[in-house]
Image (cartoon, helix red, strand yellow):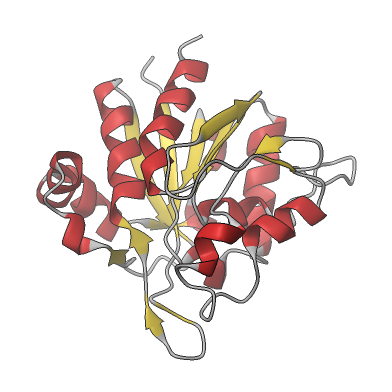
Length: 223
């Protein structure tokens, strides 16, 4: 039977005191999407509010996977993303959360998202996220009361990267917050590819890591 992946995206389009424009960072959704489709998977989209999501980094549209996403089925499907509350997430083999600054706005405390991630992980499905997407893992508690990230080898956009990207715009430092909840945080050189899997949890550091996250998710699902 064809594997099914649910990509959960933010609905935010501005962040911070200066109302910096944002959205889902194009390669962080387009590159994993290409990997999932190449594997023959069904890929669906959900967003927190059900409103049309936003894309950031459209200046990177020259990249082949980004262009294919924009002009093919990917962006068309993402624009019609279902409202997460109306989706039966239990039918999916994996969920994936792309980054961009947008998730820092509406994903740190969203109760339904936390519930969905915990339930997905505890039924032995795969959970993936990249760059600022791992903010979705923050404050996720498992049924035993422990934080999902506690004792897990993970990564996300790093403190060093944020210092040279959007420090004045983000409400908190993601690396620091994940580490405070017990994550075993792995840092590579800024903007270099860094993706890792710890059991069913797959994370990536930055846009260059998005394809690797997709590939590691597929590897787990192919076992």
